Length: 114
Image 1 (spheres, rainbow, N blue to C red):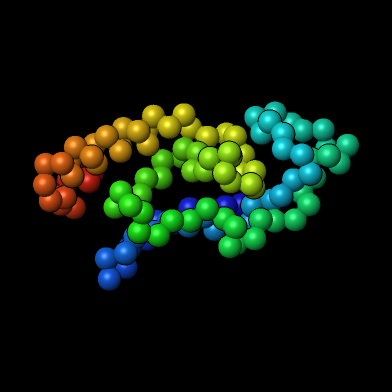
Image 2: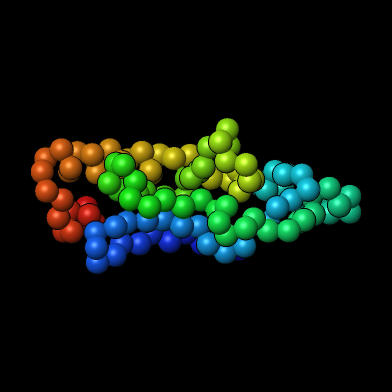
């Protein structure tokens, strides 16, 4: 069971952290279908250590996006987090809108729900 948290502090910092227990499996499977539990090859071995979970602090772009999309690049991240992600269209749409708002000047809280 894992959760994602975005946060901001009074000093102007922003961040993201995945929390919870993410299982390390003997062999990743296709999560959309039942796995053959009788073989043991997909059993949970242990859990990914908290310090190894995805996180971000004050990203260079100045914002964070979390929209049920894949948050890691498996070419660089060694732990398997699954493959049942949304396609990323929501994250791309949010990023495009944020970039537009930022290019027009100061970002105001009332612009966010639109």
